[in-house]
Length: 307
Ligand SMILES: Cc1cc2nc3c(=O)[nH]c(=O)nc-3n(C[C@H](O)[C@H](O)[C@H](O)COP(=O)(O)OP(=O)(O)OC[C@H]3O[C@@H](n4cnc5c(N)ncnc54)[C@H](O)[C@@H]3O)c2cc1C
Image (tube, rainbow, N blue to C red; front, top):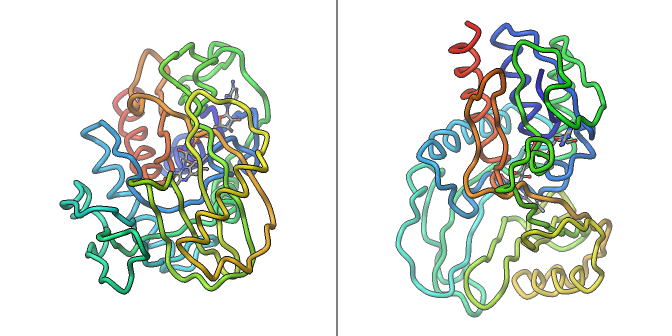
């Protein structure tokens, strides 16, 4: 039994079914209404490093899966150039060898105030169509989703339980290390944007622009410990302003939607087995980027446990 229907629960349930287990999902929120997965931008990118030696392998494997999916034309996946802008020269990041086509942007690619950058080609994920695709793939294999909020994992009558509850793990298993990291994003239509741009160092707070067709997702915020999912109009205005400084063509874009989500923050990802429970939560701002690798790890732990 997999608890949770975000990207972590769905990829886990798909891999378990592919491995021959009769995995089923129970979740308080369906995939398209999940607190984190359905709100994210999202891109494959090691946004803020994950302090776990296994993360490089998880990230690498997930990139391969998304990349192949984009080449195969799966819903919501496209390959795009991306740049993280740096206000001062910096060395290579640890993931330079993992990412595709790592390079330094030329001066013409840097807006005022930025002297360096890390540029890659990456996979951009339009999360709602892609979650719908994952759900369809899972149900086509005989999987079901029961909508139910659990108070305790003990309520489940199953040989093995996989806990993929994101920020919900704080209450469900009493893990005080789990903290919501609130993120607000703005979907706009218009502008001529071809690459993903991200800033998280320097005077400008975390800002990103992710083009999806004639729309862009603009972000963002990272408010630790904040559970309130009400959109803040002032923050919306600031996000659009900062993004327009980086991509002036956004000045003519119109706001289509504002969404607020809760990243499952934790000091590190919890992916281990305890009794009949495998935990797979706490991916913070990296859940999409680590998802397939973590799902494979759950299958390994399942095989070790039940054969
Ligand atoms: C604004 C924003 C931008 C982001 N951008 C990126 C990005 O660019 N790249 C990237 O890799 N990641 C990004 N992330 C992070 C990523 O979205 C998360 O790490 C990931 O979605 C976590 O997935 P999850 O399935 O663990 O959690 P969720 O998607 O929150 O799903 C949790 C599931 O557990 C269920 N659940 C919880 N408690 C219970 C309970 N008691 N009983 C039953 N079910 C329960 C919920 O109903 C839900 O189905 C972003 C996140 C946000 C918010």
